[in-house]
Length: 138
Image (tube, rainbow, N blue to C red; front, side, top):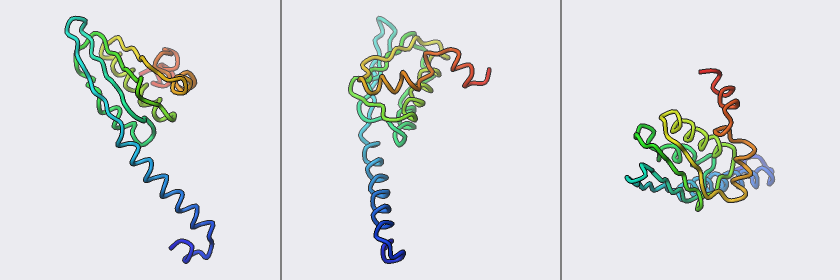
């Protein structure tokens, strides 16, 4: 339709790639899941993240966490997950910062090398000065 309307094959190809990318992003976002397990002896809740975390699944990622549960320790196991972009890193930051504000000791384990590189570059949850700057003193 785009080619007929614009008489330009390049616009048609670009539109096809754009639409295909959006459908692929939607499909990938459905393949993320998080299961949690509570260990009463150590008062630890462990979240096991599986799948792709990126701009299209970041809200879903955040929604899996219970920020009001009174737990001393929280482990976020991302051994079977991958963080693709800065939106995913921001989602993890948001989760960790909120959980720490509720008094939990939060640990992230199992990062793959690429995800660890993303977090090293862009994450603020382990940088008190960056958190303070980001929050604007609130």
